[in-house]
Length: 340
Image (cartoon, rainbow, N blue to C red; front, side):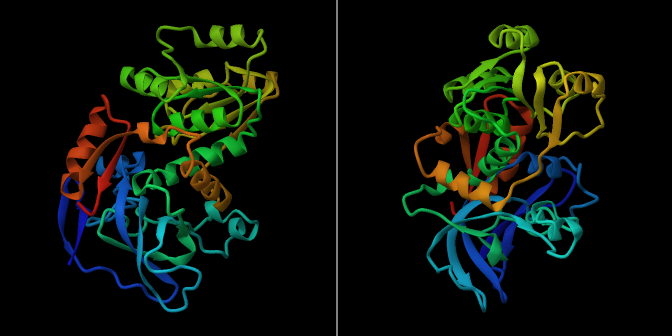
């Protein structure tokens, strides 16, 4: 018998037995080792997505594990193989898919939100979502591949180049990863963050992190760039303050990349965008090439990813982990040890 953690609305998590889902044609069953808690999981827990997420939902989509069974017709994947999951299931028929953008399919099913997810002993997913991992990669680190792929996608679409000056607004898990990936591309990076613990962790990761409540961020960027402004600004706070600041920082024809999901539509200074001919673009999830790059980065020593993991809890303590994350403090990325 397998175990799973169910979201039952009203900030209620129930952990109980569940039948291991048998893989059908074109599906793969994965025995989950670790599953990371995403900001989206926290939104679900807070009830923000109850219109989309039914009761008895199994959350979780940042996973690592080992293939435990194969459905009919699955080739190129072997039982016992270490894998992670790219949790996107597109329709492959809508205009976005036909244009080659299946990652933002108009009918996209996000596994762990629109379907049952990875906070369970065995997770059955479409074979096309499976990504094999190097045998030398730790399963803990492998659970960070999905959020790292987000950062790889953001930096790629932001067209970050070596020698450029980059500002990341927000030093949470995704902001820190965006900073690390941009820095790995050869950019000079400043991360803006107000949470003292995240400032400390960001600095431990090797990032330059400043508190905008203590430093005039616009003046600092202008000082460091000879008055030109930043080449690229990533907005990862999802806050009105971040939306206001992001247009004050770029150089002429600089780029602004919106990474965060805004709960409310913020005011944006379109005159500033017009005046300096800035490029404003949104980014959402990732594509296969981003997952491949994330696996390559995570399997090496270029990024200090292990320092991002600030806690590991057993499945039975998922609610405790969610509570720790919502209270802030020292929490950055918490993994659930599903097999514990």
